[in-house]
Length: 322
Picture 1: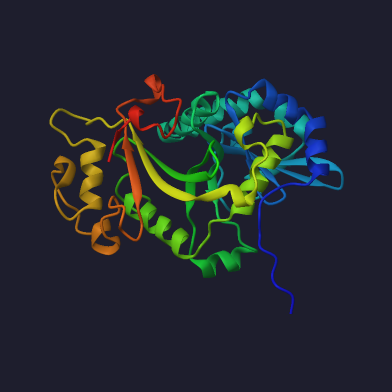
Picture 2 (picture 1 turned 90 degrees about the horizontal axis):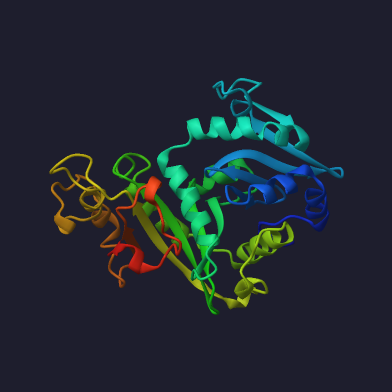
């Protein structure tokens, strides 16, 4: 019985050629400072504010787009509504770009906007030590049934790669302020997802190489240091949690760092005021300890969306790090 082919990302040369002949290529080049291309398995996602505004596919020699109608008319539809998502040709999408931007601005959270700005600031800086090659990364599965069996629904905010050989990959979660530190999608869930990713050996070097090469073919500016990257050049990966707007919301209130400590540790570290009933340390150990089975680096900055100037995403001097 033949071995199952391992799923990996990337698009065909025909897809690339068709994309570069379409209006989408001109749109991207014109708005390269605000758009991000995400390479998937035989399709692309186009992001504004790290918000997927279009799924781009290539079928029978044609570039096709699928978009949530909200971005066109600003109206919210239920998931079961047939008109929620519809196909649109590249010309129509480009003609509606100002509407798409306007509606995305209304929908996107401060965290999503900060995520996008952080990626752009980093990738526009030639002197940064890292290149962000993906946002909203999600593990690929053969189908929904396989995804369900895997019980892994993580979506990582930013994937970055160092510019020095041997290369390291950074898997980054971004937090903005205190709102999303607790709850179902809070820091406990992120650490749980990091652990599953590690335990299931989901790290795929070929996927990273294919993604970078696809981006380069699509016209994305790739740093010279990684243009000829090979699988054997990639050393491994590290986990990071970046917190922006590390400011208390009120006088004498807790900062996001203090709040996060309450979910991470059993003791009142980082001047924490209250410890959660369910902590990361109780189930995964001290994840800030390099000798722990899973190690995560935490970076904190008081900078907010309006004054965000970090242009080297993992340069420790830009943060208060732990």
